[in-house]
Length: 314
Ligand SMILES: C[S@@+](CC[C@H](N)C(=O)[O-])C[C@H]1O[C@@H](n2cnc3c(N)ncnc32)[C@H](O)[C@@H]1O
Image (cartoon, rainbow, N blue to C red):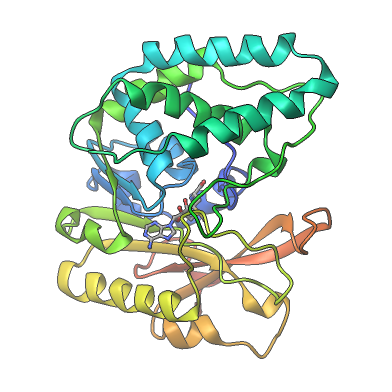
């Protein structure tokens, strides 16, 4: 069966960094003694898909604070074939619409998505989830840069992406994703709710919204709520608490503020005593999202592993 991979584009997605991350996983994951995985800032789930098909992960707890993202994951988990019927229809509509009229199609779907919001009872999937999940995927694949941004009224307001072609879904991948998700608990939740699912034999990967690398860096909230320095510091405290009270293996990634300001020691202070590694990423570094460059990202862990010589210990 084909390997499952992210079914959406997601800002901050980790696909391109997976190869570099490989060096920094805990040895217990490689040895197979860690079988429990927790990812509380799930997004596109690049790491979850990579790890769950490579290592012996028996239980996964996956969560995010984006309502429609979680609705879509749960729909793929529980009703993949019904979802595929809707996605096929969206692909057909898109392909059969002339280039100049595709913006209208996009706006019509976006308007429907915004007008038909409903209270979601995550405990029980209902029929109206299926079309909403299909719309979420359609909008993600056809909007500008796959951004997810909500206005103050909670409406999705990203414009059309003007693509010549758009592959809205890959049937084999949706089915592969559904299969992988069978062993996962998927929750709409703040990251701190993962606490009860963490044991000593758990690997937790935190990928919070990036701390902006500059005042002009592109800004996305994903959820309608902000994640500023105050929230980054609260997360650092949560990381420390998990380390001390649960003894789990923890890894966290973020942008490196030293890309912009070599004096900025925000993360050294926030994660004092932990290992801070640098990996090299290519990503948009200004507000128009066009200028891409090589910049460093940080990987912070609470465990020692090979190659330890790369670690900068503060
Ligand atoms: C950098 S993205 C994660 C990207 C993901 N690792 C990937 O590969 O696509 C950060 C995610 O955190 C979510 N988020 C923001 N604030 C949150 C919070 N307080 N608790 C849980 N998730 C949150 C956003 O909805 C977004 O999906």
